Image (cartoon, rainbow, N blue to C red; front, top):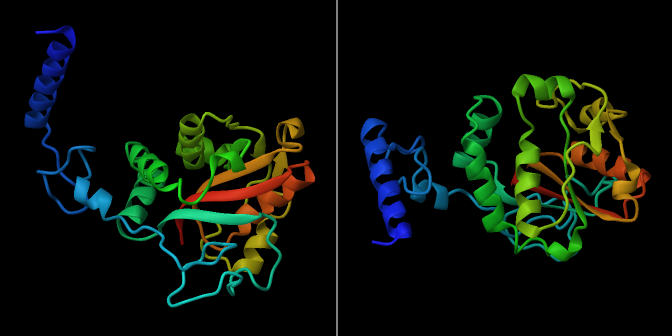
Length: 248
């Protein structure tokens, strides 16, 4: 028996023993037989997560039913100026995707980060050519909020993509300098007013003349991403694309 074969056998034995003590069970459907990639989510629930399929707006990625033309601008972005070039999303913010994001952000269940990263890396290639981005930045949390939560979920996504694509990612270049009211119950105008002056670029040289890929977990109205893009353009960014895991 080779060293690798022995190591694989030992790993398999250890996982079997662990499964006996802590049986695998999908937190979505309760199944136990197909929890292979993740002990807490079965392969079927992972694969059946709602992808964002066309048709959707070419600017803000809002999904629509029926047929739309290539130059269609949806009501979400047709009446306002958005400061990013375009936004893209891999999934719909529904079902297991919503559960995973909420469990990570509000339930402090950090193991869901691997699921979000896997969905992102599996679905990003049809949306974006890696040659379109020079640097990856996460939408920042205010330091107080990040300390309370213990992490920034946008950084989990930005870091995973940057490592996969072998392009630089910077965690503290774009910063949130003012703590804002939660956006959940605000309409678009209130969101935009709430965000004014909330962001700053700490190191403009990182973004000056470069194509920035801005990343977050969920895109809803696009207000946060647009305000971040405005600040990045003021700092000299050549272009700003937005990529989120999910579209609300």
